[in-house]
Length: 557
Image (cartoon, rainbow, N blue to C red; front, side, top):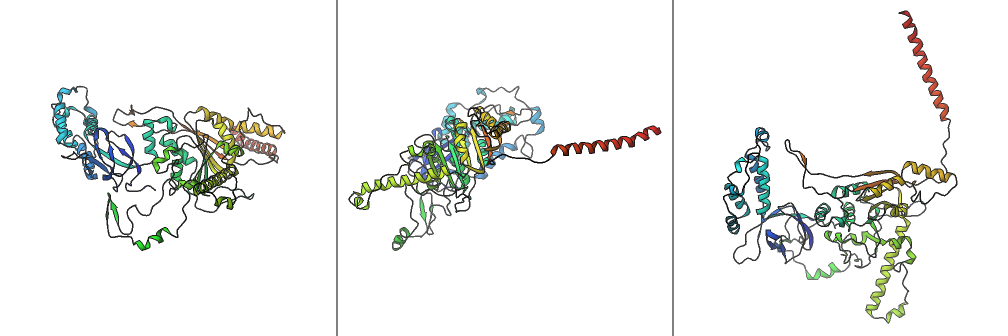
């Protein structure tokens, strides 16, 4: 659950007047630069709530940076309703006669119609606020009355984006991170949009598993337990979205930081009289729950995400925006124990991976003669091996709730080894920026190919690996879908898609349900052909009776 107030060393996004997002990490005692808008001290945001709009004030003499002012919601609402009063009806919509009759065909949009020069505007910037500059510009525009309501609204948006020094503070969410990366590095997240990420989360059925007990089937194998298998090559974006649905992306806090022992911290200053008794300090650090190791902690048994990767280390760099850095993990973060990673080599050939091999066991007498640094290195290797062995053995055992794939690899090669690890009734979701790889997967799991596969097995033959690279009996109801939200301009007589919409890949999602094939042949007994003939005979008798009843009636005429 995201905090309601801004905390130190957290990532957040600033929505600028141009509707663009700027993602940054707020650190105490630093300066935040916003380009032409100016700069301000990061401490002025600490402890303040999210979703508020702030305005940078003009610097006074002797000030190196601007101060901030909270723009009240009533002020923002007054600016919107103030525009709607002139030339609009009571409901805030344009008057019908003006919307239909008035147009800009005879309007001369020339810079000469603005009596204020650029020099005058630059002088106003030194002494006046942004709204005052906009008011002066509007008052000195000779052709403002000739514009339509829609033209005035667009004109006001341009001026606000240019002269208002405002921004809105928003907490870091997956949707905002997507908007930010789609403008900067769309290929980094495989051009995955927010609506596509929502489809993946819904069809994968990722949720919180309430029970802490480990579920096992009749054979003693682990089944379910809120565990999902993930192949993520979007830098950790899919992992972050799934972890958010499972409630492990952030740590839940009952109270905000700074509200402890009756004291409150607001904007860097402490109020209240909640002093700490030094005699009670050892009790706070003494008998408590032992902290897990920072480097290789014991993995959790339920509500976990197991990430398969092809490199030595997984690429989960985007998790840093949510307070978790895989290169330097925070032991207090939920992902520290609920996120598991292993390579394809460890999954398919664990005996060839040096990390999976057990390090030599050293006798206690010999270890006593070692220095502390050497003993620490030895126990660190043992913890790494124990964690690796636990993750690899659990993954190879299977029984996952579902499989989520977002990779540039051929999905056929992934599904060959990963589908068998999903439990019966689990979900399989595969994302691809283009449709061609998923069309092939749809064909390999089609009903016709499944029928041919069963017929070959019934004859006692082995299916050809080229014709059947995947077992079509393992997945049921394969579906291919896509979703894209398009921005539209909705105006009377001028409704069309937004001309500035971004292109790129459409993005497609393949979904299917994991099933367990029945061992042995399927037999169907019963004389279904006789029933069909009998049914046809009954229908024929009824038709003959109706014809005989209608015959005499015609003859009487």
